[in-house]
Length: 628
Image (cartoon, rainbow, N blue to C red; front, side, top):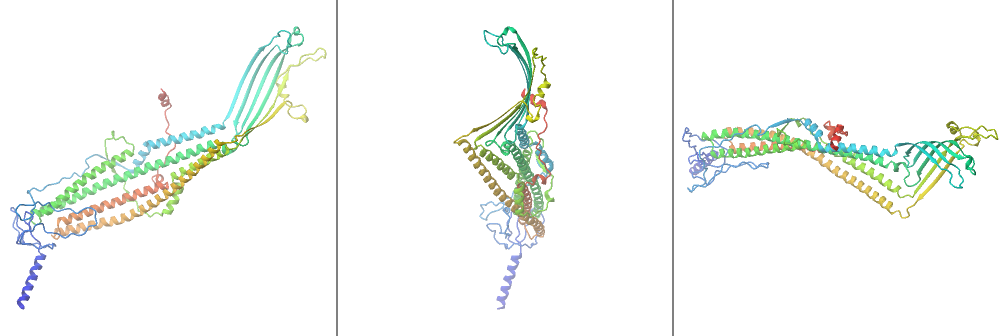
């Protein structure tokens, strides 16, 4: 019984020793049969056994594959690095590591393979807004619509007219006809002013003065008695009012062109704001993407440096015989993959830089420096939580796209009002008041002793009014009034235009409702994206901190022989992914905040930007040169 107990205790001790022992490897990567490390041909002999965390006991025979190693589950999306490649042999002893004895080396240039230029976000925005072609086109559109407003107001301009007329005629007697006048001479001048009334009518005032000399016979029965000349002075003012009573009457109807031109100007200004916000949004997103590409490039360079340190450390231990060349191959494979990732990151930075410069309106064929190094640090911002209901209210009040549609509805309402008025019959009133004053020469009469009197302008003006005011103020005048009616019995054209105006108004209202719904959904999505990105920033920062701690701990385990290069590389990979996730979360937060500011109309004020509506002055000679 005691011998059986002793045997059991001996076997248990042997198993415990085998479990706690670390298999030793030769220079070909194969475990030794005696549990010790075989020395390299050039190095000193080593006979001690190092403890290890591996659970695989050493075997007396060469296994068919490298000893398995327990790995921890990973939450990253990138695969863990594979060990060194194995090639089958023909000796029947299982796969062996093929090693020529020369280990590859890697050399990384820390500088970018292309020139870069430091650009601040403020300078990017300023230069882009000054050079953007679409914004300059919008500025001219605003100026054109302002000119249209001025042209529409020209319908109510005051018009002045003036003229002069001279006539001379001779009509001698022919045959036995009675002759009332044998000739005349006249000289007249006129002055007038008229203006269209905002309610639809027209008012006209004119004033004329005429001096005429008529040659008339002394006796119409006996032309041989000769003729005498009589001068006549005439002063005649006229006041005429024309006004529609149904169709075309009303202040809103007649100012429709002016109101629509002003609405068109406001719509163009809203479109200019939309264009400016889109330009700034695209620039911000492109700038943040350049920042992401630049920092990602820095992170990948740092990861290569860490991997290079691990490569040198592993080389030293392999040369000393304490590590298997398989672990060295794992580091080399990771190094090669990181070199590839670095090249892709450099290419991504070039691509993002070109995109940003294109949005800035730069001529890529003329610039000397391709790359961009963003110098604006977004780390100063603090993630905030936005209430989507409050943001929706702001968007409904300040969003330029909604403003543009509201102005379109107002313009359609004017069209409907004018179309409804055009369905009425045409009934026009015209009234005219025309007083006059005359002064005519009086021929002397020898029989009555009347010496006669010459006419003059003063007498003509006095003769406009009566000598006795009880008989009226005006002595000589004409008053006329008229009504003219035009009625389209079927009126199909006006009815069709009115129905079309109503349908277009309903369509504009439906477009506004759809846009409000779309913007509300976009505000909710942006607010949620901000909240999500803020949480991701906190989580990613913790992940980076934990990944750094895990890397340092894994390095310490590796230094005492309780870990492998494979595990250290896994921690390096986890740190790289955590840093990329943290940076991506920050960029996503900035882009979501930019989108929310676009929706609420706060993007330009947030960056201190203003949009001008005045076109730049031009040299008048440019227009002459263009005509030539």
